[in-house]
Image 1: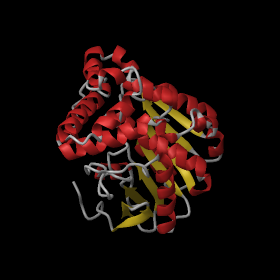
Image 2: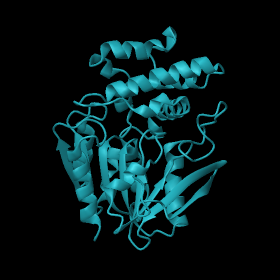
Image 3: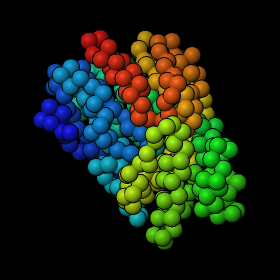
Image 4: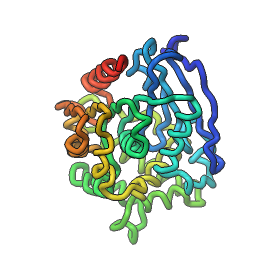
Length: 317
């Protein structure tokens, strides 16, 4: 529940160029330790639930909606949305522009899922701006990871994956499924777009449903969110995040001296634990936690507790 203590005390729309306005907000203690939240998706938007990880008496927490989603404009769900200036490196520049705009020297970076990839990309480009990093459901959006999640996981969910694949025209089914979906999601026919968005989000709900008690994401019931989310995820996955294959792992040494905590679930087959493990081996200051009964996200209390404990520990550093 929102209270005066958790509501934003400052907010705005930052002009980041390319006709893009990025929504941002700040909550917590104006004199507290700065932190920035990098949401998942891409396209999920920065929901208020992210604030629960922080002691708002100690932290100055910045949340923002990445390009094209949430309250940022233009909306990626608009019929004629142009995503050509919506890439990982545009987002990295946006984060740094926001840091300067808010007068932050260094900040703790919290991210999850796609937000973990973005956190690594940002921190490796701007290590002097990062005090600590806390990530869960760790990804690096390599071509191998994209192939795993869009194709290889059909071995685990064969019937569901066949339905996902068969929305794509037959001549494109053996190629890049994310790009094929991206084309469908920008089709002039709204019925084609909606069918593709429904199928994409149904597959999203399927491949994260590996732990007991999982419930479908209610956001996918909203046709606008569904289209926005599917467009952005397929756009990013179809290009493997515009990140050179293996570059985030190769450059993890740039994070030396930055304390970090990585939390991932053993049952998170959407973001297999080997990604976090390999990054932890290459990052000398990383602390890795693999939670045996957890899947994707922070649905398990044990994941939330580890993330919160790490952030609490860093509050006074």
